[in-house]
Length: 180
Image 1 (tube, one colour):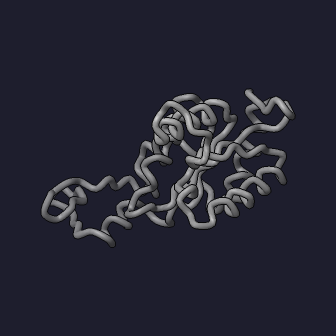
Image 2 (cartoon, rainbow, N blue to C red):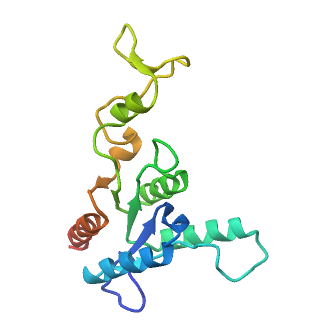
């Protein structure tokens, strides 16, 4: 397991989520980092665009910095709360997929209660068709209805906890098992 060079026993946790857009982002990350520290974990904060100017465009620098941090992580804590709609932030979903592909464990929080289909049914005009498939009215596009809180590709590849603190506790437990 890859660990921090300053303290090789502390697993590094990449903090993924749209939290960089919060007006209180700095304070939020300080709280998350303290929660990591309390469990013997080291927080890896996402790049926020305040890095030193370079030859690359700022968005490319942020992408490269975040991918480097993600590759160096032992786990990912992901805020998968709905962001500007019914789905999580697309950048966070990308980071979760990258972590899963790299075989880095992911624990998410912020996921709304209930199923995605129930949320879609409440927010959009949806109804079951003759075969019982839930579809959007007008477009006829099927709404995934496996009873999961997120799309199956997320729900089946990660762990979900109700709060950031519970997610970090789960991450600490997962990493302890992996380190044995």
